[in-house]
Image (cartoon, rainbow, N blue to C red; front, side, top):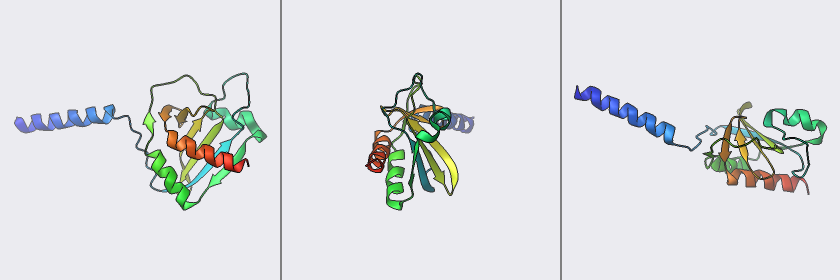
Length: 144
């Protein structure tokens, strides 16, 4: 009886811990390439552009930046480990869409607006200043 009780307590504690943790633990160990699609963050639109319609709406106006440098990818991996889930927000007006590839397969998509509000895979809102700052710095360098 006590063995069953111990197992039950362990299972309950495991599930409580799993659901209470708001850290995003994506597997980015094999991250091999990053592709950033972006437009000028100051572009005005009559309505919010969501992650799924970004390329369709901006068509030929968006630019593409590819990150393949191993040192930069390692830095981004460190940043990704700092992602934290947020409660659902209002729709964001996407100006940057970041595709993360592991061994040439798409593993995740992050989108963010001019204020750095992030959405992961078009469903989870996250906070990650490190990631947003890194990508914005790369965009600024590409625009020079």
